[in-house]
Image (cartoon, rainbow, N blue to C red; front, side, top):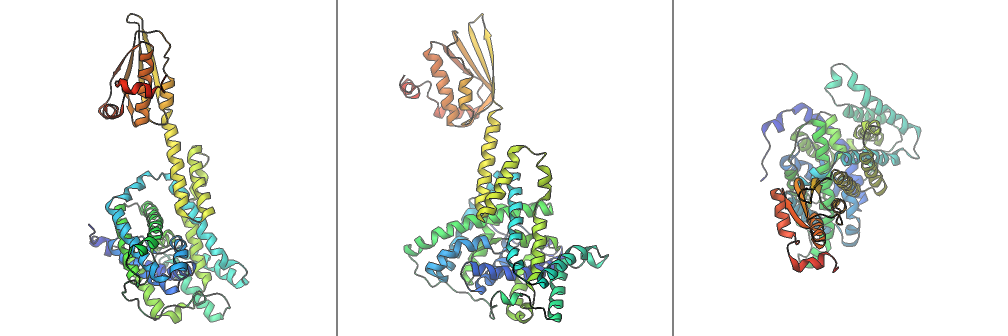
Length: 497
C-alpha cells in the first residue's frame, strides 16, 4: 500500500527543493514539447503529462528527489499508435500502462533490479550521457556564432558561479544561467532560437476526461501491445534512474513502490490529456545538482511548469535554447562516469565488455531497454561461465576396498554439468565408487541429469555406486527429478544403448 512520505521527505530541504523545482520546470518545457512532436502530438499533450506525472509521483513515488515526466524513450513507442489510431487511443494506452505498472509493483518486479550488475548500470549511465549530448547537437548545427557564444557563456556561468563565496552555494547555477542569458538575449535583441520557436504553448489548464473510444476487446487488442512496451521501457528507465539517484544521494528507495507510483502517475496523466512518461535521469540529475533532495522539488517542478506555460508563456517564450543546451551539456558531462574510463585498465575483461556493449547498443539503437537487456544477458553468461570453473573433483583410490572416492567441490548446474561428467573414469576397474557431494550443490535439472548419467554408466560397468553428503536442497531436487534408481528410465537416459 502507498503512503505519504514522512515530514522530512517533504520539508527537510525547503529552500533547495523550491529553487531546484524551478530549474527543473524550465528545463522540462522544451523537452516536453520536443517529445510531443516526436510522437506526432500537440505540444500540450507532453506538457500536461509532465505536470501530471511530476506532481503525482512526488506523492506516491518511492524515490524522493527523482523527476518523472514525458520522455523521449516513451514517445518513440507511441508514434505508430498516434499515426494509425489518434490521440484518444494513446490516452487509453497510457491509462492501461499505468494499471499494468501497478500490477508489476504488487508482483514485486522492482526487485529484479538486484539482477542488474554495476557494469550494466555504468554502461547505461555512460550511454545516457552520450545521448543527452547528441540530442543537443541539432541546436548547435547550422547556427550563427551568437548561439555558440551564448552556449559557452552558459557553461561558464554553470561551472564558475558556484565558486563565488556565499551566493554561489545558495542559488543554483543553472537557474542563473537561464535567467541571465534570457536577459542578455532579450536586451541585445539577438536573432537566435528560443523556447517560443519550439511550438505553441497551451493557454488553458488540463481537464479530466475519459478517452472517447469504444470499450471492447478490439480496442484492447489495439492498445495492449503498445501499453506492454511502454510498461517495460518505463519501468526499466525509472528503476535504473532510481538506482543512480540512490548512489548520488547515498540513500535507498523502494523499487516496488516506485513501480506502483509510476503506474498511478500514468493513469492520472491519461485522464488529464497527457502521454505516458517515466523517470528522467537528465532532469533528476539537474534536480540533485541544483540542491533538490525531497519530494517537494518534484511537486513544485510540475506546478511551476503548469503556471509558466499557461500564465507566463509571454516571458517563457523568450528563453534562448542556447541556455537550455548549456544546462543539458552540463547534465551530460555530470551523467557520464568518467571514472569508468580510468577503471578499464583495472577491471576484468568481462566487466569492460558488458559496460562497453551496453553503451554501444543503447547509442546505436537509441533504446535504453535494448542496451540494458543485452548487458544483463552478457553479465549473466559471464557469471555462469566464471562459476562453472570453480567446480573441481578430488579422487582417492582405496586398494583395501578396491573402491574409488570422488569428492565434488563447487556448483553443479547447466554450464558445469558436462565438465562434471568428464571428471569420472568409467572404465577404471573398481568394485565400488563413492560420490561424496558434501561440498557440492546441485542447482537445476541439468545437474541432476548429469548425476543420473554418471551413476548409470558406472552401473553398466558392473560398479556399485554410493552417493553421500547431499545437502537438503540438492537432495530435494535429486529426489524429485533424478531417475538413476528407476530402471524404466535408464534406457532413455543412455540413449537406448
